[in-house]
Structures are given as C-alpha cells and as structure tokens.
Length: 560
Image (cartoon, rainbow, N blue to C red):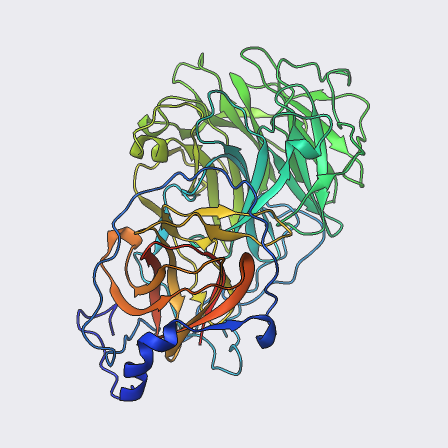
C-alpha cells in the first residue's frame, strides 16, 4: 500500500477502454439539477484578499492509467471516535465548550455510506493541523466552542492591506478532525449592525437550540447577534441596540470589548469583557436565559494581575479558569495568563503564564480560547507566522493556530510556548470522500480564495495557474474510480488535476486524473463535472491542482 511502501499497488482490473476514454470523459459536464443536486446560485461576496501560504505544487503525473493506488487501512477495528453526535441545547463541558453535543465515539466507527461497509481508515501519524490553521485570509481572536460533535471557531478578520485594526466582518470555521477546516464564509458584517463600525474579537455560545455571538464595536460597546445555525448567518438580536454600553454600571472600562460567553453546568450564562493599558479592567456579568439581556444590574470586577484584554472562561473538573492577555508591564512581555477559582465570578487566584508568545508573535499581545474535544484539551490563539512567511511586517496581519493543552495533577495548566513548527495537533479521523465535501473544507492551500456569505453558496474562487487546495487523509474506501465536482464557469477554461499524497508538506504526489472545465452557463450556475481517476483505495491526501488558465469556481466534491 502506498502509505506503507514506495511501490503503488497494481490493479489489473482497470479496463483498457476506461483508460482510453479518460481524457474525453473528464471534460463532460452534467446539469446538477438533472441529477437531483442542490446546485444553487453563488454569491461572490467579498471574501477578503488572498493571503497565499506558499508551499510546493505537486509535480508530474504517472505513466499509465492502469496503475491503481492503495492506501493505509487499519488492520483491525474501526476508527475510534468516528461516530456521530447527539446535539444538546444547553450546559457546558468540563473543558469549557458551550452546549456540547457529546461526540459519539462508538467502537463501530463510521456507518457505511450508500450501503458500503464501515470505514477502517486511520489517519497516518504525520497527518497534523497546519500552523497556522487558515491561510487564505488573515484571522485573529479565535473563540472556539463544541457543538453537535464539531468544533466551531469564530474569528475576526484582518483585511489585507489594512493600516489599523479595521476589521468589519467575522468568519467561522468548523471541523471534526482538527485538520480539515470548513470556512463558512462571512457570517456577519458591520454594515448589518447600526451601532457598530468595526468588529473586534467575538465571543460565542450555544443555548436553547440557538447560537449567539457577542460582538464589540471597537472598544465602545458590546452587542449580540443570533443564528439558527452555528455556521451562520447571524443577525442583530436586539433591534439595532447594543447590549452593554459605558453607561451600564461598572462597565466604564477604557476598552469595552473582547466579550467571552460561558455557560455553567446549571445553565447560567455569563459574559466576561473589558480591557485597558493599566488598572483593574476585567468585568463579568450574568445573562438572562434569553441570552440577549442582562440579569445583573451592574458588572462585577474580577481582580487580575497585569490584565490587558482577551477575556476567556472555561471549566475543568469543577474549577473555573479565567484567562486573558497580559499587558507589557508583567516583566515577561505580553502573554496569555490565567486565574483559577471555585466560583465563576469571585475568589480567583493568579496561577501564571498559560502561553508565552515567543518570537513567532514578535512580542505582541494575544487572544485565546480553550476547549475539550474527544478526550483532549486544545488551546486556540493567533500568531504572526503567516505574516512572517509572506515577508510582511504588520501587527494587524494575524493567523489562528492550535496546540494541545494539558493539566497538572493539582489542576494548574502546564505552560506552553507558541509553536514555530509547520504542523501541530494530530488528525483524529479520516475525511469520508463518499460524502459531499465542501471545497472550502481545507487542510492546506496555495493561492485560492474562499468567497461567499454564510447561508448562500460558499466556494473556492480567484483561482490561478499552479494554485491548489488540499484535503488531508481522505478515505477512498475499497476503491474510488471518479471524483465528481460541482463547478461554475461562465466561459469555461482551465484544468483540474487530481493528485493523491501531494501538496501537503510540499509532497510531489501522484496524479491520478485530469479534467477540463467547460462553460456551465454562468459563474453562479453550478453543474456536476464527473472526472474518472485511477482506481484508488484506502486513506490518502487529496489535492486539486489547477492549470491551463483556470476560469471557474468549485462548490463541493465527492468520490464514486
């Protein structure tokens, strides 16, 4: 098998006629409506300018189409933790993730797709999350929650070329494997909020079957938006009025921003916020059950050490952890630090540094969140690694990252330093290629952009020659012989080259198919492009590499 041996598995069952028909069949398009697909019109959206991450493009193809590709498959048992989840509407996990669904981890693994046997694919040991997680745009201030067996990471968006912190929209990214992250597009924009002009670090919670984002207008007010879907879109929940202003008692801190939502085991929701260059500026307040109004008549001060901004609360084994970004007077530069208590609003004791910034963040402040997911704990934060790789020197070009977090026996957190490695946490499960996969569910990319708004068609676009998008450890099961892509193109043009075990980590890979894209009737008219590939089985990285002056968009794909 390819992942265990440099020699590919030879498949003698491939018919000569299929080989000869490969090139002509690749270029055919089938109307998606005729096949019962959802198709749909795309909204090009703003998406933001691309921040290409670089990396080597895969090289040439293979000599013969009769060569099949075998993959790594577990010799016994199924992927643990691959089962579904039963979403819950309230409560908090011990790791601080709001309203977790409790991911199912049955030993039986994934259910078969379309009558196929259960998957036995296990990710290879080197399959890990790229650092940073997102490279198509600059992202910052990650607030991660767990719901329905998935992680949803809400981020602010540093626009390319901005001279200040002029962020105006939010994105959310989701995953169930820690490596392939789906960009849900723009989930809300400042122009939808009459009281806001700049959208700084968001907070997020899930309760009563709805999803709430707490949104600061720069440093002057905090409002709330709501959605029926964790992937958005979100709308203003208070009819054009903010939730907290400086006039609210004890909320007149220098920077009224950086809200963090926390729901305790008894269902009570809290909001933490505040910031300033010096003094005691951390605040907490209880929310009503409707999540859009305040239960308390004044905010409570949380005494801290060198508090700057970036409040976050999580709970672990009965203890409350209030973390934040420290100011530059702490004697060790800005860092993520934390307090512990037996109560969510009082009795906190300083415990030290949680995450030291190190050189990768060039000494700047940070913003983090902590969750428990499938038995492990993870810290999300932002760094300036992508900015440095692109040769840019801007404090406001940040990128989100993830590292595993562990606790000492006494409940304190083992201190971390920002990773400078290109890859961090391990992939938890294979990506089922026989389910429809959104094209913007990305492990790594080069050059492309993700465009569109949540609730509409979100797609990869702005594609140029030698751009590519890659998906980590796709399960080809017993043997896939085609990939079906939903594409849109006004005039046609360009080629999609299908490569296995390439692109990620700069690998050369093996080309198993190539398809020409023809006109579909418009840039918002999606049709299915069925592309034969060499028979490929097991788990492999899948890369779509683009050439021949591409002029198309891709919405999704699946294997057959």
